Image (cartoon, rainbow, N blue to C red; front, side, top):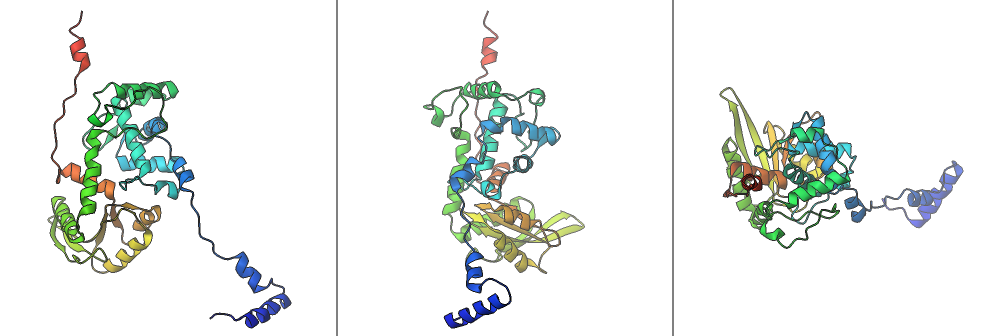
Length: 327
């Protein structure tokens, strides 16, 4: 109920009589103000890819010498005490900026022989990686090592330098398909994207996958069955969000509420990212967990399944091989 000015004055006198400040002063003092975030400062909180060289190696050591990209990311985010706002900064293509820099750090470390070039999605230390101590001189050498490999076409005109860079590394041609794939996904109609997710779930081992929400992105978009073995199976509901932005915790709670009593498991697939609150809400104690698949993980699945992607074979010249024939 809205308090009229005369009622406010009488309420103020009552507050003074009982020893409290006038209510009009309290309402001003405790008024809720919007939280302002300085995007520039938040971005500065994220280490550059060259500053992450040592941190990535340390993370792998703590993880036992190897780890999945998500394990390395989560370990570093906690170790570096990055804020939720920093972890939610994305690039223009919707990819998490922090993870992008972690992946670029790994790219350079692979070229220098400190991390093995596994194709199975596991980052593993080499013997050199276990013993190296990263300093500025080693950073320069790592960047120089990467500069000796054949450059992709879109790096041909890049300025060559062994100096430690604070900017983004140049985009490699073999990563360009990720941006192109995301643009394809963004351009799809809602119904087409849901049918694509239906096919992706089937390719991943789900059975009886049915799309039910072709009219839009709200609510439950489909269901399926995951058969673990002849004795155990789970009914799964899924939701597809063709977003460029961040999916927050309210969407997780709404989806969980819709699936209660109808399925054992839930999956939310998005072309965007999930806020840190959403990630925590998805695994909150006492409620059914929900699997989250963001744009970056979605592209990883496309790559591992070669789903809509045609792999090309690329040869690199082994300079040491030819040098061995010299006198």
